[in-house]
Amino acid sequence: MRFALRPMTIRDYAEVIHLWQSAEGVHAGEDDSRRSISSFLRRNPGMSLVAQDGRQLVGAVLCGHDGRRGYLHHLAVAPSHRREGIGRALVERCLAKLHARGVRKCRILVLSGNRRGRAFWRALGWVWPPEVTLMMKNLDEEGC
Image (cartoon, rainbow, N blue to C red; front, top):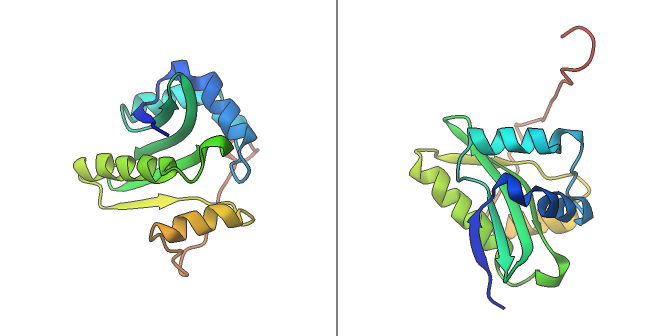
């Protein structure tokens, strides 16, 4: 099957959020509002991508960087289009875009229970550094 990659725009939001919400192993939550995704896309123009089969959106990934490290978020491919190279193509194109901007390392977050996702990333050569532990703070909580 053929597919085309193109930059994600906010006009894709409804289809993308539906894809993320229906994809096992992807957690699309309150931080993925239309406003939040619009802000991310503006801060990282042309970096995030969607895959299309004709008019159907079949894959998506958020891609951005902070000037030194790249980040990929919410890689998802529709179940009907898996094992066709779409996920790999999205990742490779994002990494090429990051590299072209001088970014030399990229990070991802994978939910600990997402065995299929972990296997996918390992197959692409990604590793989990044992010296890293993810921590976070909700800025909406008291005391910020």
